[in-house]
Length: 392
Image 1 (tube, rainbow, N blue to C red):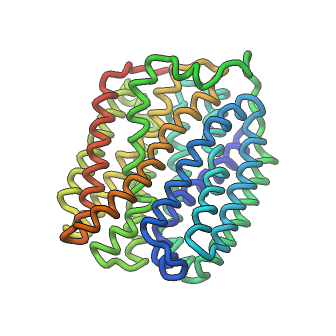
Image 2: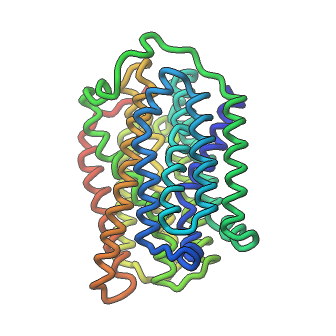
Image 3: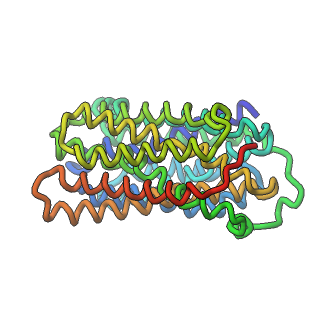
């Protein structure tokens, strides 16, 4: 399984890259294509919503035909195809089409690796393995910061996207060649996501899953670029640096959250505490939006670090459903996470546009966004506090 998992992790590195690269390319896309922050918010939101919608068929495909074909075919058509469309874009709408394809292509790669972990490895190490994949995959988040800014400067943003097209296709071929499907479970074809939704414990976990990743992914993937530009007058290099700091914090968070349940002897309260601290960081940013840029950067890093509870939340939810629904179960949990991010991209785009029209300073719209993120996290952890703790 190891070589196959490595190929899936490489694909996940690109998945993390593709969900965040628009923030760094924002100035170039505005200059050449006339893409506004609202256009890029829409394009980014489409990536997340399409990615989320794909989790239902991806989950069924993982259970029925296995991770090898599911991941390799979709990543070849959507990952390489979407990068190619972006490279050839002539209008903001073309960027939207490219992001739709990229969302389709990236949709199976993380769940394919989680499917293998859940079916092949001990349940006790699922959270740790999930955190390691997220931590390593988050190098794509880092690559979409300073390295992307450098590449765009040296080769142009179009040349960079053409190179990513070739890389994506190569990784899809590696997945097809190296991934081995795990043995099928009994009753593999029976059941559906509705059986997962019938589990009472899920309904106190899903609300926090819906909002927990939105502040870090939305800020890092979209708003950090316009925020630094509008409020601090940052150039592409400085935007890349701030994005890099936030991306590194997200990686660190993944590695810390991964084994947290074994360190603390609980899943619930580690997740609860981390997300509550993330909400506090959002509130601090709302009150200090235009302060010292490095203090603001530190707070953004905290949002990224505490927003990395995804692997523990997947492990918590996964503990409640049966083996033959593994693919559909983890994909449903992922759907809630990614759908929350996608929906918030649309909402924050509209909130930013509306607030900009009446704002007294350039910082006011961003203060409103961080306040909204903080309130959503606070609501999510409040509901989650009533959930049932469960470790394997």
